[in-house]
Picture 1: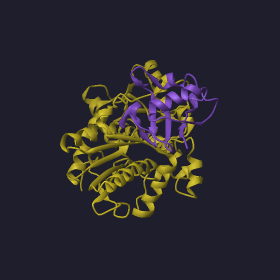
Picture 2: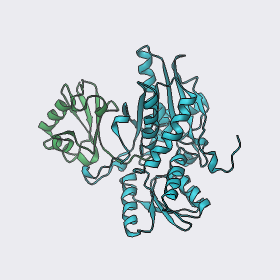
Picture 3: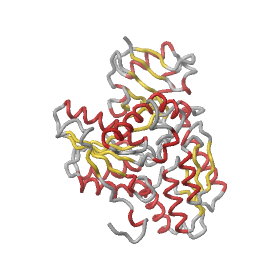
Picture 4: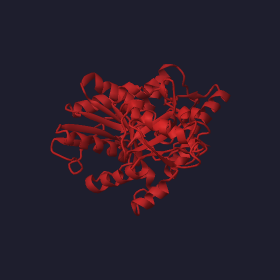
Amino acid sequence: MRYDSLLDSLGHTPLVGLPRLSPAADVRLWAKLEDRNPTGSVKDRAAFFMIEQAEKDGLLAPGTTILEPTSGNTGISLAMVAHLRGYTMICVMPENTSAERRQILEMFGARIIFSPAAGGSNEAVRVARQLAEEHPDWVMLYQYGNEANARAHYETTGPEILADLPGITHFVAGLGTTGTLMGTGRFLRERVPDISIVAAEPRYGELVYGLRNIDEGFVPELYDESVLTTRFSVSSKDALRRTRELLDQEGIFAGISAGGALHAALGMAAKAQAAGERADIAFVVADGGWKYLSTGAYSGTLAEAEARLEGQLWA
Amino acid sequence: MAIEVRIPTILRTYTGGAKAVEGSGGTIAELIGDLDTRYGGLRDRLQDESGLRRFVNVYLNDEDVRFLGGLETPVKDGDTVTVLPAVAGGAG
């Protein structure tokens, strides 16, 4: 496939079957390999669309500073585009994210401002909002509430999946900004009656839930509960176990959130099989495993990997 | 057997520091009511007049009860209920 530039090659990622992990001939799992995007994650879709929209709206000019709270992938996508277009990129990132993410961000010329580990992404959002107030000339694209994030998936991810899998019965993805699920979910719901839209939410160690009080909680502005059929909380242990199964059984070297999505997908597959129903379940592999090597997720026993991951943001 | 309820750090002041407590009841609402008799004030932190509080998520065996039946979701002995504050996941 030929493209005018790397940015033009966004999307059109492969949807691959999982012959070994699928429980039956008529209950099949399909992985949408989003690591095959320009910077290696599903976040390229949201980032490119958000920047394009901001440019249309006249918010960006060469030299403009873009600010974003991010646990990594969105920051990397934005930093790459910003680098090519002459914008300055500042990422607010929790300090408990993998070393690779920092290195890649710096490689693209982004500046990183670390937010405290306790509180996870909530803290990154809080710090970024404060910085945006202090620097009114900076542009915060704010992925948690930017309609272009969900629209990217409504216009690209959703149509791609439906074209490749017209008989789709379930769509499963990780829940973070909720953009992937909201955009893809809305698109599929409009065209596939009775489709199940399933969220796999990462369940982290206690550190990440270290709020001072419950009213400091956070629900992304993009989130619309009515798009979802159900929502699972996936422990680090289950996500790790499934990430390794994906590698062992199917040869797919994926990031840890893919294991979380696979866990929920297998749960839906088991339900369909028990009910004697056919199922074609597509789930999102948000990124490859490269950025998580330093977390030790792929080496030693599962218990060792789980212990090393405690307190880390893995999605 | 009873129903195990996992309590997040922020609400352990109500459970004497316990990470997990046991309760009984036929629904999530009854279970929370049962816990409140021993851990006074817990119910008010979890629910208000409209149901579960906005920033409180309750999972029955890892599935969000808002998609099952909310406070009226049936529970049984051997189930695990997990309470977590809503946070900005990691993704992003």
